[in-house]
Length: 391
Image 1 (cartoon, rainbow, N blue to C red):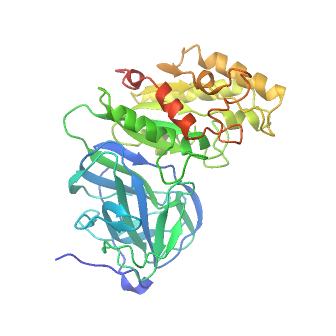
Image 2: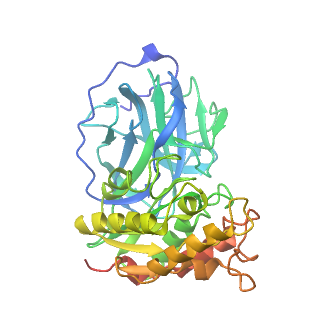
């Protein structure tokens, strides 16, 4: 008989044992970089919507307390397929367990995977993950710029499949940072897109999965490549070298990227925030950061492809010195000496009338971030063969 946990009060759930689930061994189908999210709320329920890339069986979900300063208990954790809004397809919402337990406590600074859930999850589907935080206090962990509406509430049954009671919306993902599946057949793998707000999807149409990694996932599904999973590890404002909006690309490489199951290749598209920050970053310093990322990815036995830094003239941060730095960095990136492949996104995005500006066809209006058409152009520029270099 299915146990139903209502999101009512902290006293309604008993504390559980630490998570004992082993790391996932399938292929990552969705991911989002965790960061500090403000204060956790005791007794709150979350119903979060994420979009899969590759399909498969044995669904596992990773939960994060990476930025917490005390243990995080989760209960009433369920996963199912969305019908519309906060409502699920009838019969699809099922409980997740952790080492066989319905409740899990994640230590501060840690993550934990759920046990495998029998059944198949389709590619390109909206997965719904529901949970309750009975005792949450202190810093919460999650991803603030979801570009996707999710739901919260109190006194709501997380096992329920209807949308009633989920009275509030959130534009963030809370405590959730990865989903894996076991694809049919052998040899399937994933690519991780490591980047900033362009990769995070800022200025794309919210709720439509129009980030460039989403377009890439749909493209990979239609071509003959074993790389089918796409994990979006973009953080708005992120830099290669310095912490700030999230840990730097260098500092989050292990937790956000190399720890993901089934990763074949890392696609690095980052650097514009280092260039336009005017903090004394030099071409030599940024190039050294790129090289360290490539070396660490290669040492882990994975491929790394890099994208050139796109134009941003028209932004308040632009000046001739920043443009000269961007061009020097791009000259290095185009040499391909440290990488398995290069995608020249500067050439894709720049205006034919002024190569220091993003093309009017692709400009979302802020002279940096691509619109939906530009996001698709970014994805279309990636050679699927470059994502399976056979290292």
